[in-house]
Length: 274
Length: 266
Ligand SMILES: Nc1ncnc2c1ncn2[C@@H]1O[C@H](COP(=O)(O)OP(=O)(O)OP(=O)(O)O)[C@@H](O)[C@H]1O
Ligand SMILES: [Mg+2]
Image (cartoon, rainbow over all chains, first blue to last red; front, side, top):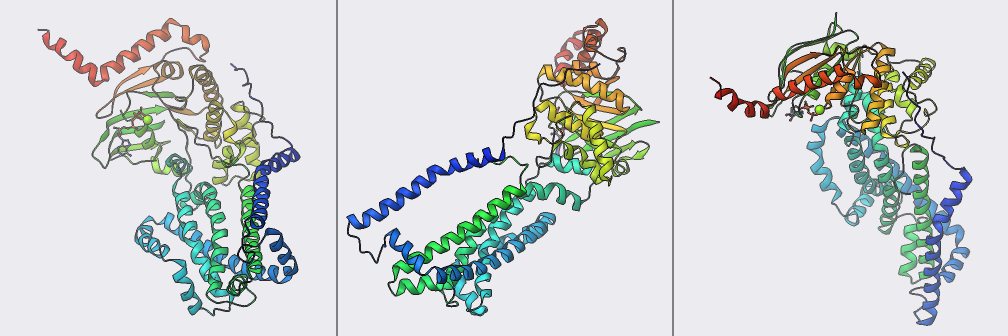
């Protein structure tokens, strides 16, 4: 007794070049908006006679950036290293704590209120304290601030991911006589990965903000936050804006690196964002 | 020797719901036993107790002559749920090989067995697809292949075709019978469909609710192997009627409706 084979064809996947081309096309509207914003910005400053030192024209900022590019890029690199260090510490700790809390729910119930309270501390209040605890001119104090900012969103999202497994998936593992460790490795962690990546992407931005805000309360002269702060207090707004631009560029690059890592890791999972 | 031996099993949940009471059932090698009964009568609960996914509050269950927890540790059964419960991040082949990985089979053996299973459920060529690229019926076949991949003596199935349309369901029924014959396993199958139960089974166990009990056991003496023509035999209709009557006798509502008439008799 045989039945007719099902007439379902494998899904055509398209060529790599085709997919890259389609991706590039997706970016066109965003680029148009960017160009328009810069044009309007540039022109309205001339048309409405806005004081140039308050809101410099994009072209002026660009040329300032170009003349100061070595200083700006190396200052940005310094700050980025702080952000990266803080990101690694904060996210690493959050992942470990999330695993512990998912495994031993009782610990979670005991600790969660305090972690929520800690998350409510405003970073502006926290930054000077970290500068006092650690050497304000070292990278360590900024890493501490960035780490604190990264910790909570990664913890919460990872924990949700680890515990949002369908009960039947767990029962299935039980039916295979799989232990707790195997269940984590093969079901809970893969289920949590999309959640984890979402929170890591948020954390990249938070880490940059943490490092720069920390530098506002004192830091090495080679740091980007210190540079932006000192230029704006001395009315060198073109330089300050160029510094902000560099901070954004590092932040975006950091974010995109994580987004790329996510794509490579979650190749098989249907993505919800396209 | 019985593959499954259920002795005086009862289950009362923490909230106080008595889902099962006094269940006695022995299932022999190569049997195909269907559990049928109204919603909430404890079919899934009974299946999960046999699989040691939950513990009974009374009685004992033995699988392959061993206590149920030991049988689970020895991977003596495979289970299939109403939803395929495939892992989205694994391809079809890697879903089927998951139990084999957990049983520490080496890669060569795993690949060989996965190919064999794909042929068995007629999904050759789909090994590198992801579950979301398959239709519901195909997903369920992957789930069956996975449950059979490590060659368990017993296959537990909880409404595996409940979510499929009638046409697909009938085709899957035939495929399941073919797989049952080819694999030589014993099957315990939960369903809501009387026709499905009669068509597939060697025995149909009828359950009644509140508390869940076995109200009747009906031998299905239709000729093997069953074919599409089996559904048109007079004996098939007789047995369907027989199971339907047993179901109605077991249900509360029918008991109440029948009661006044019974009292009226002298
Ligand atoms: N985890 C649980 N906790 C408390 N009560 C439960 C639990 N699981 C099931 N029950 C109860 O046990 C009874 C039997 O449930 P079960 O799921 O076994 O029924 P079923 O026959 O499979 O029903 P259906 O045909 O709808 O799937 C129901 O009354 C249900 O409410
Ligand atoms: Mg059920």
